[in-house]
Amino acid sequence: MPLPQALVVTCFDFRLQALLDPWLLENLGHGNYNRVALAGAVKNWDIIFSQIELSKRFHHINRLLLINHEDCRAYGAESHYERHCHDLRQSRQRTLEHFPDLSVELYHLWLDGRFERIE
Ligand SMILES: [Zn+2]
Image (tube, rainbow, N blue to C red; front, side):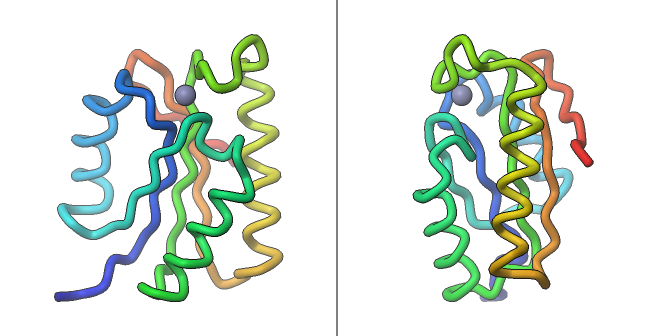
């Protein structure tokens, strides 16, 4: 069994699942990634970082996809686009401080199904 290449971090929100599954299949392939689903995605950084560390140690992933989304209840009134972009970028920076060889991709998922790549 080949090792997964990527770790995907998303919110656990049920509204995302029907959007995520086909997108992940198209972009990463079936069974080719580890997946963490936690309320607020990168909002709970300590937990997320522990999962990145374990994914790297156990499966030697080389790619990390961080996906926050529109109208995230874990962010409440703070769930606006700029806040998500800020948190995603900060998470990428913190990740690269520990794992500079990891390719980190950031996405803002709109509830209409668009995955916006954040640079
Ligand atoms: Zn959410």
